[in-house]
Image 1 (cartoon, rainbow, N blue to C red):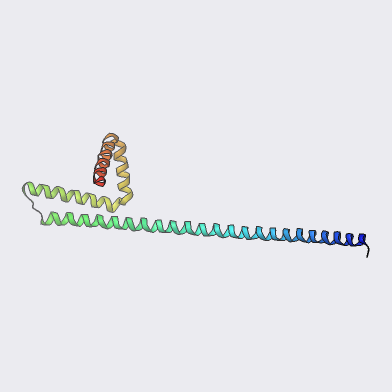
Image 2: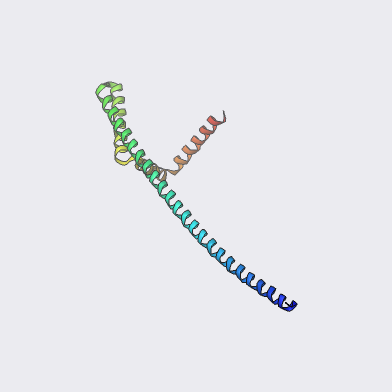
Length: 151
């Protein structure tokens, strides 16, 4: 074989290797795209599952909190009834026990009927109607909390 023939053979082999390398690179690129697409889909599915589970857990906690609030309201009404039955009925102590029983009964009914959302709405409306006293109360509570936690 001549030198020119060897050079042609080497060039042809090099070109074939280059073409094969190019095809292999394209195949690897396609496989990589598929892997990333599948991984992205899996991550999206996992994120959706986590979000759904978190929403379920939040709903469960909120439901239990409302149930507990209703139970507390029922107990408050029960205590109000006990105070009415066993507390003094005449004089200053009678008036005081009656006022306490009425307050407990009203608060218990409110808790049973409206739950925590009703309390939050009541507080929001009170702050809107009386903003200055609400701010002063907030400042006072902040001062007291600061005093407690600095000691």
